[in-house]
Image 1: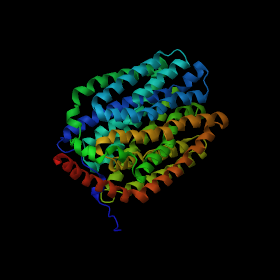
Image 2: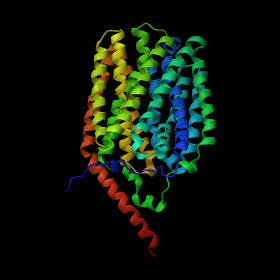
Image 3: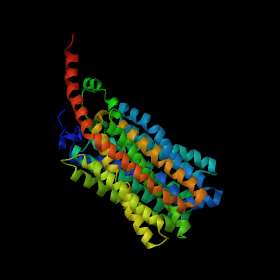
Image 4: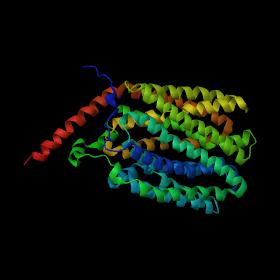
Length: 439
């Protein structure tokens, strides 16, 4: 068998033809803004953990569940809701999601006990379930294919920036006005953006143009799971987010307990750490696109490097006593801990059909949440109840070693899987044309 030679063409189909760059950036800005609202509503809870723990006498496991239920619902519902969005319209689906999570966040502000808060957080998770996957599908559809890792990384960084704002503003608002106003502020911001989005973003302008016959002939849903490299990308991404997601959720509590900070100080410092994560995500993604322009498999090599580098830095950080050196190492470790977002998203976009990118990113989100964002905070909370949060944090970075191993499996099969996908897409249009002229 002839060896497969990697090239820039390995980066899949370009769906941005006919879309002006100015309009593409408008779409990105508004979709990015709603993602920030998404994560502000999700992460504001972390800033008020100490207040809820004291007012309602909650355990760390209960607090972890309030955070984890959102990620769990995202994991369970992202696939079916993204599939519906691909079929019935991504724009109106995004707007409905934003309205639901904003109203549910307002419900958190009105909760009178743990049970009501749990129900409200459950509904936040339902509203946010498919936003990340459908939103990033909209973004990659309006930009050239050679920008996929950068845009995916930048878009995912919106989650970090939203977390920063959610924790920082939430901590300050909770300290001065009470924790209920922290939730209410996030809810009003989301509702305003949800009303603006459909005015400027139109479904007819962002939908990739392709014939129904071609899509039917290609059977695009099969590409979601038809290659070993795409499955490995899902799993590796989820495992690595176990680390980054856990540190983000529990950092305000860690600072409160081991640095004796109030909710406002802990929220601001935790937000700075998350901001480092967001900046690092963008830098890591840009580096992937630059170095992988002629050799797409280099993106996977960089993802492996990010996993192992974050494991080393965070392990060293949590082995140190509380102090400046520890905080600096945590910031450096978090800068690359979520750097795999860009390359893993680019891999998924390249290895799946453009017509089901929303569902493909939903599958990635499912793995991210079930393996990382939902299980990480919950498991860490349970371990913390047994051995303390400091000791629990010392174990968390080791998950990155498993993530690196799975990315290595993806690298071994990436070229052959891309060659097979391209061959199928070249054959499919011809088959569709034969079907059209057949009497």
